Amino acid sequence: MEAEIHAAAVQRGAETEHEAKDRMLRATSRSGLLQGSIFSSKICIFVVSITLFRYTTMSEQQQTRRPVIFSGMQPTHTLMLGNYVGALKNWVVLQETHDCIFCIVNLHALTISPVPAELRRRSLDAAAMYIASGIDPERSTIFIQSHVPEHSQLTWVLNCFTSMGECSKMTQFKEKTERHSANVGLFTYPVLMAADILLYQADLVPVGADQKQHLELARNLAERFNNRHSPTFTVPDPYIPKVGARIMSLQEPTKKMSKSDENAKATIYLDDAPDVVRNKLKRAVTDSGTDIRFNAEERPAISNLLTIFSVATGETIQQLEERFAGKTYADFKTELGEAVVEQLRPIQERYHALRQDEDTLKAILARGAEAARRRARKTMQKVYKKTGIIEFE
Ligand code: TYM
Image (cartoon, rainbow, N blue to C red; front, side):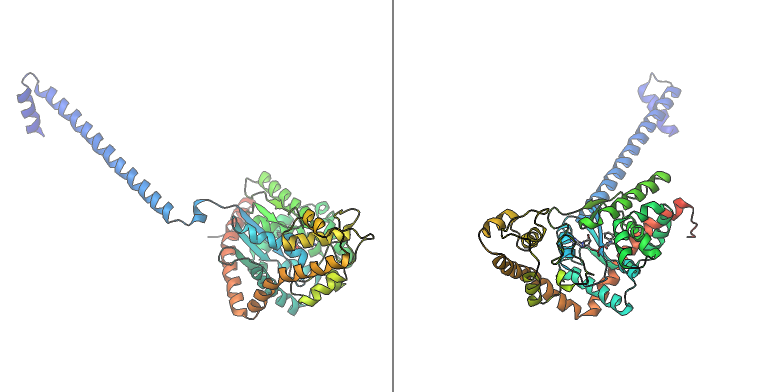
């Protein structure tokens, strides 16, 4: 360096050795800066390439976070047409566009003290029915609630955020306690349901109209927790279908169709044999009059049957009214029977095949529980941290 400075001074002549030294130092520092900026550009290019590489190798799902859906059904009885129309059918469509988690909520079922062997069997029946109806275990997570202990853990925390009044005003609690002696589980049932949903940061919950009030509680609890601590839970929205949100009993059309109706003729179970379906629909009560016209308030029976028909075939209510203008209830019910039988046929075929291979079914559910648990754990860790519940690494 000394020699170079000296040479530079000599070359320029007019420059003193000191000036040459100063100029060389500035030049060196400029070239250092230049080299530095070349180096950082290289780093930039490297980082951008890695990011692009990772982006292009990421699955579609990772690139755009799809909104999360959570929903579930109680395996208290065999699933029935109302469950399919009000919820399950929509789940199948929503899994195309959403990140879906579907649960068999067996802990909820304990509130009505089921026979243990039946609860075990029906939990697997329900899982098979989800898949037979079109839920794809490769795309959606399917699992049994009790396999993810975080559901019970979050319920306890949320119990401490819920007032007695909120639980006691629930319509379903009031209705169920008329039929069963009230246990504490029945009382806090909606809190367990809120925990189910909030654990997975669900954006949307596809359910029938009867679950709206429970969904409201889940939203309130999420907001309350977020306000008291800091944003932790996504506040979920209900997704209630326009047609079929409340399928009514075939025998008492002012009451909703229910899995647990004591009158088996009131409900079409998804595994009912074709002749059973035809007979139940033939014997469905009808309103006075002969017109096949929709009017939910004045003619609840025929309106319910028109809804069932419309969902089964995809025809609008108006198209059906036109098609059956001048025809008898008997004609209508015969065609309705065939439409529902055809709707259920492929579901039943898949269901029976799945039910014969219990090992595969259990493997799907074990895989689902593992995936669900990973997600639930993350939420639970946040909740415990924010509420002061100590956890060791
Ligand atoms: P459950 O098992 O009674 O019913 C399952 C789903 O079916 C809908 N449904 C109906 N839809 C239309 N017409 C009917 N007659 C009819 N009957 C039932 C229900 O609205 C529901 O969507 N508490 C819930 C289960 C649950 C849950 C959850 C749901 C527990 N945790 C979290 C969603 C998210 C229940 O008892 O559904």
